[in-house]
Length: 261
Length: 326
Ligand SMILES: Cc1cc2nc3c(=O)[nH]c(=O)nc-3n(C[C@H](O)[C@H](O)[C@H](O)COP(=O)(O)OP(=O)(O)OC[C@H]3O[C@@H](n4cnc5c(N)ncnc54)[C@H](O)[C@@H]3O)c2cc1C
Ligand SMILES: Nc1ncnc2c1ncn2[C@@H]1O[C@H](COP(=O)(O)O)[C@@H](O)[C@H]1O
Image 1 (cartoon, protein in one colour):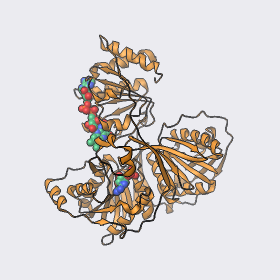
Image 2 (image 1 turned 45 degrees about the vertical axis):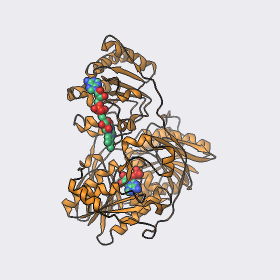
Image 3 (image 1 turned 30 degrees about the vertical axis):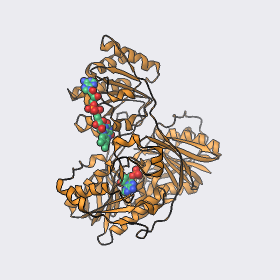
Image 4 (image 1 turned 90 degrees about the horizontal axis):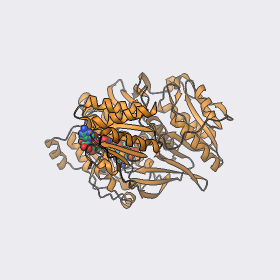
């Protein structure tokens, strides 16, 4: 059995506010690119499952041709293999085109050893959609579990997991093959070891392009009016006073006047 | 033509943000000349169906079966697709909860429809639906126009005002459920309700959050922050530093890798205001900071502030509000 992990290379979260409209439009973001923080949990889980169930692991990322830092990070953490999908295969298409390309890459990754589990993060810090794994499950025709906080077992052709939603937590059984998006509670991602980093830096990462993947075009939406959300310039009012009680009273007055309480 | 709104049920009770969405759909429907339909899927939906009618649904589609007691994506998505076809819907809307988000995405992908995920506004242009949303963690906004016959959106809680219930005039139609338990691949073997009795962060009008500033005495710190939250009927939030240090469980975390919230009032106690924290709460209407360091970055985003020790300022504020609110 093979476990595939979908990871995206995204801007360092500290640099997100500096991304410009032009960069967002062209996709040529200047920021330092790292592994999407939510996807580190998926990588950690795959490595853990490899130990628990003796499976092979592969990290799959779609991005620009030179964008392999996130994949190298996954290799350095301990993934067995990595594959880059050249994002030009979707020709600027939508989420479903992306999902189609990733699903095709999963199929290729499973040619020798069958992929029975695809792990994904909860959401990308640039796309902010939380839809790609749903598209991948749909394109593969597999079941999907989301916001999984624990993989209890993989047994008798099914995966037993705990998942959390706003109103509660449940234990679910889903037949393999299955796509799972993981939540932050699932584990504590490891730091890559020195040896891991060395090994990863030497790894050559195969690239899947147009000749390897059959991806239908899809553009179901048109995005317009991209605009920088400048935080409103507010001049803070600091309440001065001789005692903390006095300051608290002034703040309470202000909030009552705002009618938010 | 119809706008179809999925009403999420939690242990048989409708999730209230779905009414915000239904209210908005009513407005959009008037502009587009479309009927507004609510979709209810569950084992017993009678009460929610009455509510949906009161909140203005022209039509309620009810898919009921004992096998639909708990949410499972496979049957729910299939039924939603069936309802889309049956109602002739040109829009399918769900609340952007964990389940609503993935239901919307699955229906959209299967129908080859465009999706606006985590939308914050919806309106009509030239007879067609348009959605607003942000990307890059709230730093860039965009408008989404749909090129597909069906438009799908998952909409963030608190994007629209809660409608007033009115005299119901719509009707309820039962959908034939083509599903039985043996055909449903996933099994739910255990369920545990959480959050009972707590105000949910994503729905909250007011959030009071604590950060590493409580470090001198974390249990005491979160007790006083929690006390202020209770006094205001607010939800309790936290920074990642507070969560990572084990002061409070992760479900309270606000920010990049926590929850995205949009309350009317956000009171940050002992939180510095790191970019990743702002990513989750920067769109709050009014931000208040209580911090002993007047140079903390949170003061660049806050409208009101107290520069003092939170261990003194927060109880003083609680006392002040207790006086006024009783
Ligand atoms: C990938 C990534 C994701 C992240 N996701 C999140 C996220 O989701 N949410 C999040 O919050 N952070 C997140 N962070 C972490 C973020 O960068 C900050 O480290 C974190 O927000 C700091 O929390 P804090 O403000 O509580 O602590 P600090 O930055 O240590 O600030 C504590 C503040 O308390 C004040 N203080 C101290 N004592 C007192 C006192 N007695 N009275 C009053 N004030 C006092 C100090 O002046 C200081 O301003 C993320 C970081 C990364 C890299
Ligand atoms: N380009 C990509 N390459 C690989 N995985 C991706 C890509 N985009 C999204 N994903 C996966 O899908 C998850 C949700 O992303 P999104 O729908 O963009 O919020 C991410 O956490 C990743 O696991």
